[in-house]
Length: 591
Ligand code: AGP
Image 1 (cartoon, protein in one colour):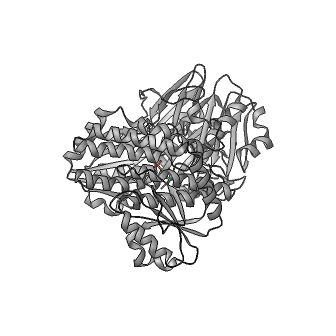
Image 2 (tube, rainbow, N blue to C red; image 1 turned 30 degrees about the vertical axis):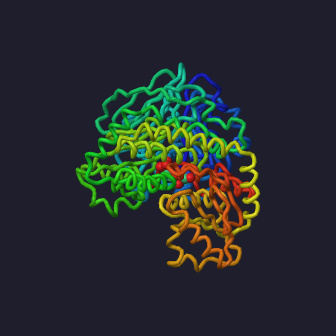
Image 3 (cartoon, rainbow, N blue to C red; image 1 turned 90 degrees about the vertical axis):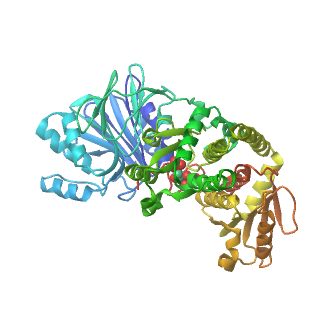
């Protein structure tokens, strides 16, 4: 939920740090800071946006041997200068930046205060530099002090530490929060996510849980913090370009990533062997669970209809945060299909660990190569959608749907047919996204709806999942309360909410649910509702029509495009921060 970034090398520190933080801003943006060593350890930090803080402290003017930095999404402690990272030891000679939550910080803080340590902030993080200081004082060895400090921490933590006495080394620690090292020539980087340094290197090492890296400009050593032994790490080459991680002329990453769906949907193709391995896992399983959060959960829910209708498989979609409550159903004959764009969502990783303990096999479906989920899965599939920077998931959703569609069809020997249908769906998506008339229509409707307090979306069958995903898009970027629900549920309560002019989007693909959903729309209209139809043809009940192709086999992909665009234009109309919506972060790496 925060972004951390460290650099050691020959370049001027200021510009590198500023650039790295900006590329991580989607992970957290309520305060920022940097610690660097130049005639002693120095710290600059404050609440506010990175650009503001950078100007205030003239980040670009910073220079020295190395630096660690942080952009914060507050979990413990208000958004204040004192609570911003980095945090320092009592003697000010050790600085730490941290992503995660130290669950036992209250006990540790009490213990450290009893030893004479003075705390400045309300954060959980601040116990780390004081712990390290305590053990460094006893051992005189920075690495040993780190090992000992880590052994006292509970919770999730990816942190960087620097010592004034050792101005050539950054210490990096990873446990349940992501941390990746970028390997350069005469320079090295370490960050929460690859885009922070992708411009300089694609050679990366992904740290695993309970690993400590000692990073200098010409070397990287990795240790297991439990055995304290050195470990050899695989070097990955990240398959992304810098352009992938940049805005590419679009006003927002959200629009860029929506538009990229003209060609990202078919990027999942080309992993037939892994698809076959994955479908074998399904065939071998007696129970199949689809586990995810947020948008990824909606992709799972949609695919559960395909599993049932196409393959006759009962694949149960479960919210990752709810998984512990049903985990007793999981056993050594189960398969958990965990879906996560970031591959770092704490609820998903916790569910996977729980499932593994109960003997289940794990199939991971990720976008970020080398992510935690990918590395703890028995088998994995990648959606190859390229970096998704906007907090809102858009292209990753349609790619997740696509890979799940391939998987389901492979179960019944229809892999090649599915590939053709996917190529056709991508063509239809491209036509929609390149239609000026459609974009103009949706922008006009967004303007009309922008003052709405509530927006309802209805769908039946697989379009129920689309209604949930459309609602999530609208609410998380425009802050309008939007609710998706199964059309058949209207009369069971929700109809009471309909008043004169209440906007309701009816998702009406050319499938077996069409007539019933139109019937629901008429019930809403009869009570004053304002009906926006997502359909390939006009209907008397529609006050507005957003024309969609009559594609059916992949309707969740085709139907979500106008809803993503509607959410985007609603946010523009309402002056919302499109790429960094309030209170949200791209990857929820804390429970
Ligand atoms: C979707 O727009 C949100 N950003 C959020 O719901 C997201 O889908 C969820 O946090 C899951 O993220 P993941 O796919 O990286 O696990």
